[in-house]
Length: 393
Image (cartoon, rainbow, N blue to C red; front, side, top):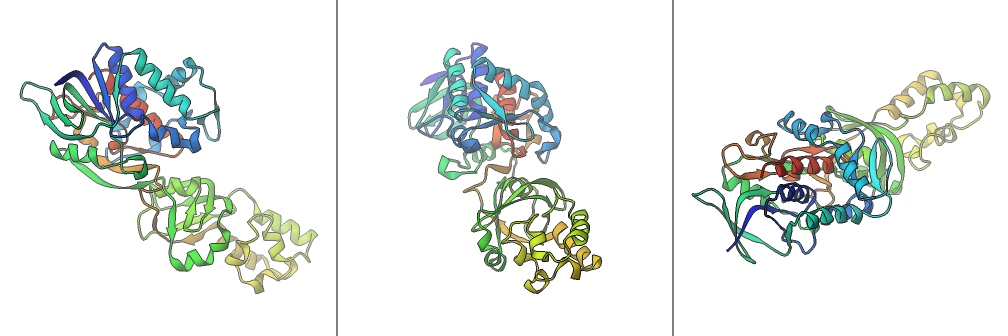
C-alpha cells in the first residue's frame, strides 16, 4: 500500500497546478493519469501553441448553472498570476487577438513549465495508471484500487476533464466518481464546436469550403463578432465555435455578413459614380465571390446599380445583415474544445473546490459545470480552480 497526503487523478492543466501548490505546502502528492503522457490537451491546444490565458478574463465569459461559482477562484488566482509564472520561466509569448495569449514557440513550453514546478516541489507523477475502484475510509481518507496497486490518501482530487476530444483519452470517469458519492451531474454536451448543416444547406454551400467571412453571429442568448468559416460539413471559425456553446438544437442563427462594412453608404456612392457597375461586382467587394450567387438570384445580380432602386437595395441589405441559417447539430465531442455541463457546482465550496458533504474529496477543471469562452478562458479556469484546491488539500 502506497500512502500519500494528496492523490490527484488527471495530469492535465488543473491537476498539475493543484499538485504544484499542494506540494509547495510540503504535502506528499501523487498525480496519476491513465494516459502515457502528461498534459496531452495542453500540447495540442491553440494549434500547438497553447492559448494559455487571456488579458481580459471576465466573469461573464463563463457558462454555468451556478453563475457566481467561478468568481472566487478566478479572483484568487488571476491571469496576471499565471502570466507571472510564465515570465519567471522565460517562456516567450504574444497577444494574438482580443487579449488571447499564445506561446511564441510551442505548447510544450507551458507543459515543461508545469512539470519543472512539479519536480522542484517533489510531486510524484505516475502515468499509465487506471483506477478501477475508489473507497472512502472510515477513519477519513480514500483508498484507490489501480492497475499499479493499492493507493491511499487523505485528500482526493478529481481533475479528469470532460468528454471533449476522446482521441486524447477523454472519458466520463469524473462524472462516475461524482455519482458514486451522491453528487449531482448536470447533462453534458459539446461546446466550442463546429456546427453541421442540413443536407440541403450543406449542398448549397459546398463550394465555399475553406472560405472565411468576418461576421457577427447572433443567437437568442448571445452574439459574437469574429470570422465564420465554411467547411465541408457546415460552419466553423471563432464566431461559430463561440456561439455553439449557447446554441440550442432547432434554433436558427442570424448572421450579419457585412458587420465590418457600411455597405449602404458605399452603395449610394457607387450608384452615383459607377452606375453601370453590375450588382454582383459591387457585392463581391464585401463578400467572397462564390457566396454572392448563393445568396441572390443570378437575374438580380446581372442588374446594374443604376437599375437597382434604394428600396430594392434595402431588401438586399436586410438579407446581408440577417442571413438566417438553421444548423442541424454539432460535430460533437470529436472536435469540441470543451464540455458543457458536468459536476454540479452547487455541491462544492467555491473557495476550496471541496465537496460540501464529502470530506477530503475535490473536483477541479473541466469536469465541473464551468465552461469559458474561446481564447484562453478555459485554461485560466484550470489554473485558478487547481490553485485554490492546492491551498487546502
